[in-house]
Image (cartoon, rainbow, N blue to C red):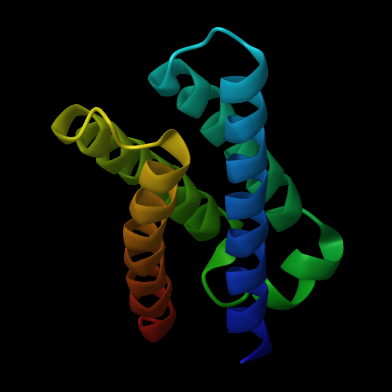
Length: 123
């Protein structure tokens, strides 16, 4: 259960980083919503992958699905997350970028949980 909570915690921290960076980029710069999200999502993925590499996180976790498995989940989820975000903004151009981020991230989080459980059940 603790491993699951760590996974959720890293995901939540990634969401927070993504949302804050997106908000700052959209508010302060002239970047469009798509470029701003690409930058914020990249920073969030780097933070999440960095947390996965921490010895205290990996020591107990590496035996379940491994760092590579976690990294694959993070990267695939990020790609899905951006695709959903872009689709939402194309479908509803008046949608605020942060609203699209929340919706896309919620859907991508469900996908990442399914991957987590699937990979854990194989071991």
